[in-house]
Image 1 (tube, rainbow, N blue to C red):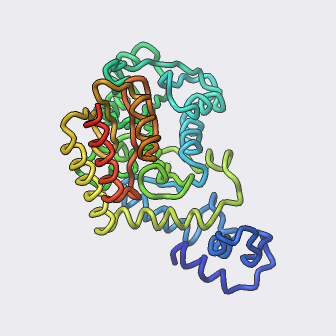
Image 2: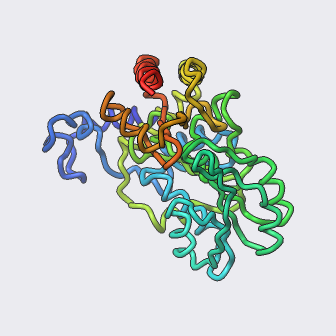
Image 3: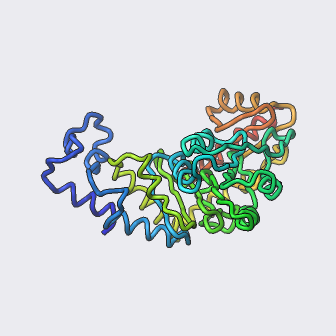
Length: 347
């Protein structure tokens, strides 16, 4: 029985349990169906029945040893991975400008945090992929290393090569793949880390159409990450959220979902090919990192917002980045294309 089936079954019961709204009281009426699905106690951290089956099925889909559903974002997955493989005093390599969860995870584990730098691309105002993994490992002898691939802007590292280096020296590789949840389901996107890293963390809500803050922790090591998750996660998880994770993965793996991903790739590729005076950059075609000679990134961002009500995801002095995902329709991209064409002609 799936998680969604259990939620539907519970709706028919007379509940004298938590949560106290009992699926009847709906303080915010627009979320009525959500309240009706919000049940208590299928123990998420000693997985049984539906949740256990859903996570096992997910692990099979991704080709990993274990997959854990996360309802506290990729942050909880990063922290759990570090707690699982790092003991107090052991060295943890992290990028100096990484997401705060990387350093926070090291602190919680009592690890000795060592920060590394990445090559900076001045022409685009972004950081490139790591290119000195073996040198860093030889110099610092860490217990574990965290890399971010892809970056916010869609710069992907050679995770297979990095994994081989880490295995050579007995270093655990943790990959923050928060922005790469679509990668396992298309050959036209960068290589996913799920089959190579010891731990891979993905955010379903960032690009794969999931709700905030659903995410996944994939474990290919022989260590038990569930113990670490029990230390940091609530014992009262949101079962509607867990059910959406199950449905989300099933959709991504379906022929319809895979077709959806290819349509997104095709639409973003068409947009980029249609704009000859706009420059684009990155390894992930679904990330729209762009710049236009004569405009700073901030100026371009401001014009898109003020003239066309288009809000970007991230901007620097040189370039602007617009995030797409499964919720980005062809019509939405055509509106962006029109706006960029109008701006281009006005310069």
